Image 1: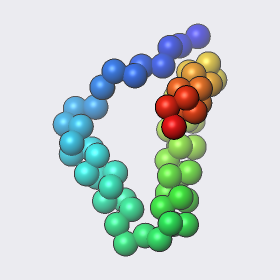
Image 2 (image 1 turned 90 degrees about the vertical axis):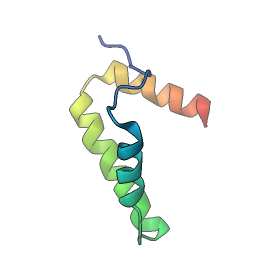
Image 3 (image 1 turned 30 degrees about the vertical axis):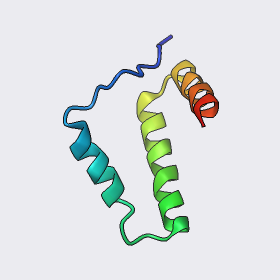
Image 4 (image 1 turned 135 degrees about the vertical axis):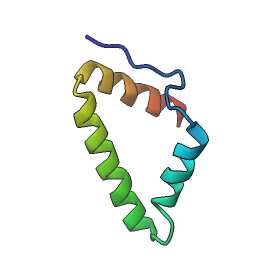
Length: 64
C-alpha cells in the first residue's frame, strides 16, 4: 500500500531530537528500553500500514 518516507519530515528536527534525548535523562538502560518500546508501538499503531512497517524493519536491520 504505502511507501516508507525516509526524507526528513520533522520541522525543527534539532528541537525534536533534543526532546527525544530528554525523554531518557535520568533513566537507566531498562527504563530507556521501555520508553523506546512504547514509542515504537505507539508510532507503529499510528502508521498502521504493515507494508510500511515491514519496510522500516528491513531498513533498520540493514543500517544497524
